[in-house]
Length: 510
Image 1 (cartoon, rainbow, N blue to C red):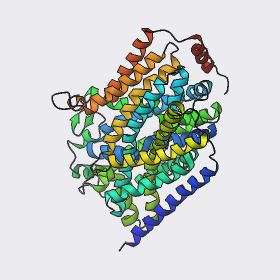
Image 2 (image 1 turned 90 degrees about the vertical axis):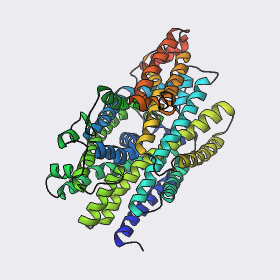
Image 3 (image 1 turned 90 degrees about the horizontal axis):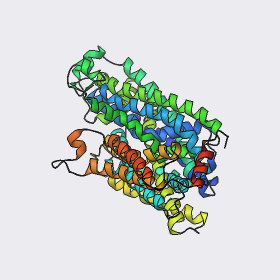
Image 4 (image 1 turned 45 degrees about the vertical axis):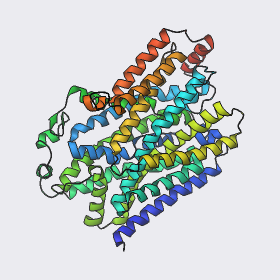
């Protein structure tokens, strides 16, 4: 028998999920072509573009992974947030405008692999094939992280078996992504981005007001490693001093932004360059406020729960909402709305990842390689089938309830950032880059991460486990070096490619 408070939370969840499905149905009526399905007809406004980009970026990591790592190890974990903020600022200021312009110049490219193909006039479709395969591989892991977050959320809130909870979250995301494509994803992400920010800002204020006793005493009582000062220090990690390489590895998370297809596609879809200026300001402010609030929640959780140490640190925000709004304020429906903010973070990333995978398979592989004469209708059908298949595979990867959200996100972020980040930067800013450098960059970056994180080549353990150095830092540098060396050692781009590069540099509104 469900309690009254549980029923109130459940009602909030059901209403929220019905809104998302309704948006999917509404968006389906406005989706009649592949450009509509993958880019929303390049008609995103500033607010929607900004919040959908940031919401699809942060995922359950923002509300579960980051607060959880700070709760467990201290504020030293905030270096990741600092790196991500720097990466967000650079991505919006330096990449967004030029990428949007260049994708239009490069034969109106609708996906990142298609942009690489058109940018380098790759008639053999080598770049298209390699980049599409890389996207599918790493996005499977990324989508699995989002589904795992959903499973943990439903399990923590309702006590539902993790595997059943995993299935519920996957089905809802599938429905609105399947129906409405990019427009549905961006519209829901806008709502989810607002909900995430409100939850992040409001919940800590209430939680702080209910802390019993001294803030410092409560944190010490929670059994932290080391003393209070080390827990609150940016230069300490789990009671131990940070090495310089550890800080550098965490800051390196920011390098991943310029290689994330689900974020870059928002830049491509904004309706004008004037809107990009507005979007940049909104996105940067949202990012700063959200990251700071998420870090505060991790520290505040230690003081709020004190000696009642949480078994799963990644549930600190969920448990804080439950405790404050169910026990202290007796407002379970409001608490349910804020928990929906966590669900929003999860869904806003998973839907974007599903859509990018669908575009890679249907548009890049099926339409551009296997069957060039395929109709728009057929490509849309393949897209929707792909969404289902990818969701099922990600569901299988996330099946283990012990899966670390932070670990899954870390691996996928490193793989995509290393494979695509250096090439995106080189493609936009270095005209001497050629197809040989592009291929070398993708392969070297992606393979470095796989070898670094997955192969036990260092005395029976992975190189990451042996060194503690984040694979993105290494993979990004190696990929850039391969791009430069391979490009300089081979034939320069022809005059048509150089002419397009110069055209994309022009400051004319497109």
